Length: 359
Ligand SMILES: CSC[C@H]1O[C@H](OP(=O)(O)O)[C@H](O)[C@@H]1O
Image (cartoon, rainbow, N blue to C red; front, side, top):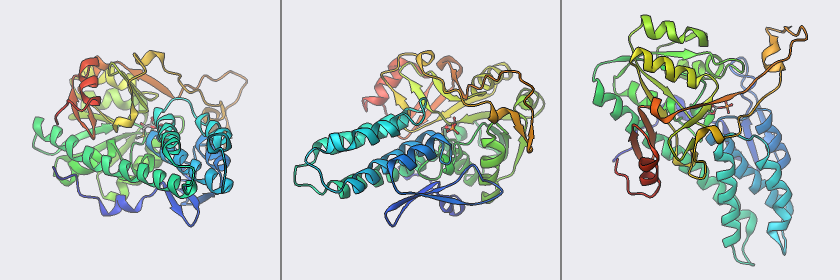
């Protein structure tokens, strides 16, 4: 099976890039107004960039953390006990953000790679190769998922249709091309997309600032709406799919994603829209039995109380959970690079993760 072809524009969007011994990050806090970059030279700078959402998106923060380990090893240079030498930096990276499993997944891969190296190995070089492999594999997975998701859309309807997406699950959130936006790109290339409705995704505005920026560069027709307009749009517009990414998928198929995703799944069910989640298998956490067991990140009040340079702080406390849990039974399909699961459940997830699943 041939993966989707890379979009020329999407390929230029690199959330992160290894460049001359540093990790160059596109500072997503400044988009779309400014394209500015931050160069990270050590694990602490990478952890800070993840925590401050310079780089964000489940796959992208996993890849960034992997490069953070490579940077840490370069600073150590040589060691008789690499596990001890890198322990503090690994913990720093692991604690940068709690919800997306890709972060701990990538760090586990780096630890396992380190454990397999011989005493005489060039550890910094081998760990950099491991980080680059995680990065490249994620990009390739997105191209495969784009094709699989497009084919699923085409299976149900072969004419151009309207889609709705939430947050940013694009090239900016991954190793390139995107997960949910990868499917939207591939579907658009196949003539299956009329228009994309983009939830602005308060409070951080990943939709209006990042997804709109990506789709505009791709020449894909779209419009931005406030999150609370989604129900009205489903009722008054002909939208066939809600397509989103994920930060962690539980073993039973529950999906942890940006706050507002759960509400969309209820609205989609009520209005008869199909609901697609697109995520690499690195986002599936088989150790998490149900989604409600996950730690939901809560971020600061400033994200809500700063609007257009004006403070809205009148002393009322803020509650800012930035993820929620969508139950598996409200999801029509989970698209991964290993295959598509329609009507996900624990058995289907187990089959997929044990490679018994066919596309
Ligand atoms: C493919 S990105 C997955 C996921 O990450 C985003 O969260 P954040 O911007 O806070 O890192 C959002 O939940 C996306 O759907």
